[in-house]
Every structure is written in structure tokens, then in C-alpha cells.
Length: 114
Length: 109
Image 1 (cartoon, chains in turn purple, orange):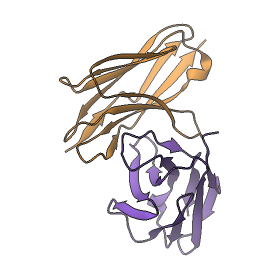
Image 2 (spheres, rainbow over the protein chains, first blue to last red):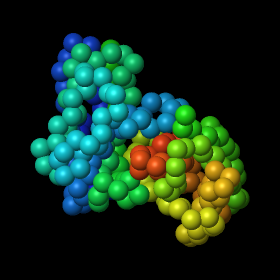
Image 3 (tube, chains in turn purple, blue):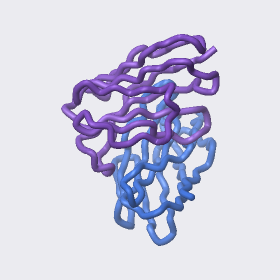
Image 4 (cartoon, each protein chain N blue to C red):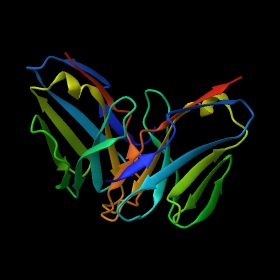
């Protein structure tokens, strides 16, 4: 238990569906991250939020839409996804925006797009 | 471009020692992380090196050579629970983490 929770743990959706992934951290951290993890590939940083403000968007397609209502919660809204978007989506948090701060990860959401 | 290289898979025997290497080419360097990830679980922090040398933490040690762009994670007295993927990540000049694809470590009795 790392103090970062994610729901759902597993999600299967069609290409026309709309769904949302939720992340919550109980560590009092100020920075939160979304990563995509595909088999045998490096972690891909998608979005970074610091004090609820988005500070990083790594050329992520607009079918992924993040939302950070407060420092403890982070959402990833999904719509009209493609099969190649199937992956493990990991949320992480850290004390501050300094990347040398240790990141604490949630267990991930395993997403399958049919 | 920026690149992190680590072996895809390694196999070792319970009770033995294994060394997982990581080489990197990045624009700048602000430290190197090692994370452990068991199948289906979250990556968890193992170590952070920013200065050259060896950092020991129980059965795990991490070494860094900045001049060679090289690090290794050393696991001693291997246990079955050490079967996992080990991820190497480097913080570049923009303080962005560049990740390796991970090394899957298989421990055999």
C-alpha cells in the first residue's frame, strides 16, 4: 500500500465509449502524474499537475483529457479510444514538482480497448 | 535522443547475487532512480543516486558512474519474492524522468 489508490483496477471499453479513471493520494503531496505503461516499453509520462495546475502535457492525443480538481485527486477522462491505447495506466504523486522527489505509484488501471 | 538501456530479462538462483545494469544517454543528469515492480502491482521506490559511488540499503545496493553513464542494481541473498521487474529512470536537465523498459528478474529455486 503506497498511499495512492486507483479505480477501477480493470476496464474494458469499446472505441465509442466514454469512461474515466480516478486516482487519489493520501500522502499530502502537491504533484500528481499520469503514466502509460505498455508491455516491454518504458513508462510514458502523459500529464503532470503541480498544485492543481497542469505543468506537462507530453503530446498526448486529445482523446485523453485530464482533470485535477484538488491536490489529492486526479482523473483521466477517456473518449473514442483506439485499440493501441490498451495499456496499464499508472498514477503517481510526489511531494513537490522537483523531479528528484520520489514518486509514489498507484496499482494502475489495466485498460483494454476493443 | 535520450535513451535508457537495460536488459530485458535475467534469471538467477535463490540465495545468489545478481547485478542489473543500466546505461543512459540523456541531456543533462539530475539523478538516477531504481524502482521495483511486481507483476500487476505499482512500481515502488528502491534507490536514488546523484553522486558517483555505491549506496547500500540492506540486501540491495545501487552504483552510479556519471562519467560512464552507467548504473547497476545489486541484489544479494536473492529470495523468491525478488522476482519482479526492475525499472531504471534518469532525471534529465529539465528534471523530466526518462524511463528504461525494465528488466524482468526471474528467481529459480
